[in-house]
Each structure stands twice: as C-alpha cells, then as structure tokens.
Length: 184
Image (cartoon, rainbow, N blue to C red; front, side):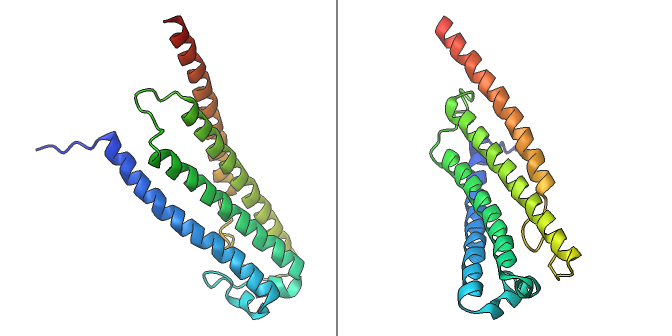
C-alpha cells in the first residue's frame, strides 16, 4: 500500500510550521524590544542576562547609545523575520495560492515582498556584524553574532537576490499568461 502525499497536505503542514515559527519569532522580537527598554529605563543590571541569557553588560558599560543601536538592529532583524512569516501564513491561510494558475499577481507580489524582506534582513545582519566587530576592536566584550540573532547576513542576501530573480520570472510569466488570455 502506497501512501500518496498531496501538495495540499504539504501546504497544510507548511502552514502549521509557519505558525510555530511565527509565534517563536514574535516572542523573540518582543523579548528584544522589552529587554532593551527595561535595561535602558528601569534596570541596567538586566544587560547581564539580556535575552536567552546573552550578556550585553560590556556593551552597556561601554556606551548606552551603542547598546541601543545594537539592540535596535537585533529588533529590526527579528521584526523583518516576523513580517516574512506573517506573509507566508497569510498567503497559505487565505488560500490565495492558486496551484491551477500559479502565475498570478498575488503570488508575484508575495515573492517580491519576501525577496525585499530577505534583502533587508541580510543588510541589517551584515550591518550589525560590522558594528559588533568594531566593538571587539575597541576591546568591548560582545557575545557571538549567533547569540545576537544577526548571523547569516550573507545567506539572507543570497536568498533575497534569488527570490528577486524568481519574482522577475514570475512577473514575466504573469505578463505572458495575460497576453495568452487576451488572445483567446
């Protein structure tokens, strides 16, 4: 007996996984934002165990403004990831992903938006990495970039460029599909 997994089943599993990732990313983004304000305005000792036990006390002691910028970059990256998964959930949940006629404006717009978000995540990650490397040269003790959730900027840029190329192909496919519909 052979079990056949359909595309609709795979998309349903992907929607569930996207919800799980989305919720985790929302928690992370809110954690970054809350802990930044808590550390800056209520209790500076919170920099010792910022988020996920990350110690940013060296950066906070070096300069509060730089602390804010680094945590702002971390928050922006997290928010962009949240937005990306929101778009994924939205397209899967609203059933606007038409597999019979995949070259449509909704899917094209979705791919463009995800490519822009990927490029944004990549740029902010690389900016954050460069910024933290500068702190290390200044003698500030900074946790590894993976713990700051700003690692992999090059991968995000690669994904963004790849998705942008795919979006351009989709755009051309939509144009051809519209031309074919007009000639029928």
